[in-house]
Image 1 (cartoon, rainbow, N blue to C red):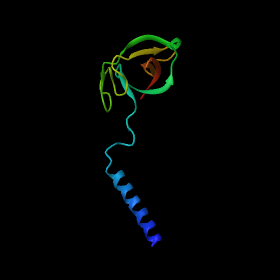
Image 2: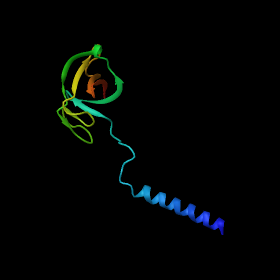
Image 3: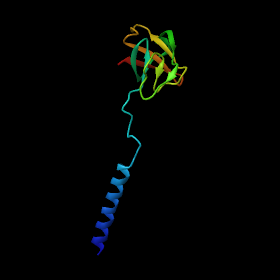
Image 4: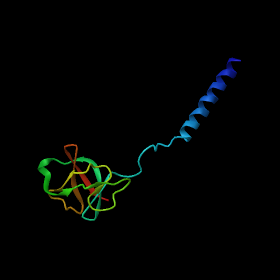
Amino acid sequence: MKKHFIKSMLLLYLLSTFVLIGCSNTPSGSSYPNALIWSNISYGVSSTEVSKDELGKQLGEIKRKKEPMPTENGDANDTQVGSKLFEIKGINTEEAIAVEKSGKFYKAYKL
């Protein structure tokens, strides 16, 4: 009798788990990269920090937040409107730029 009860509880647990997972609407993770568009180039924002000493001239700022992916110049999907964009000294802007996020600067690479 005890064995039957344990098997029943295990089966109930497994079925409940499958139902809950199958009915979930929440995606397990975004399949879109953190991205922005500037000068008709799509950039992926990385977690690589850029020091203030490495910053060149300011290029502009983010004008619109666009999800799931940016579609035109000044759009970003994970960067706040008003965030500033900069050149990185010694790097062509067609390869990478710096983007301000929460008071820090991060490298954004051409996608």
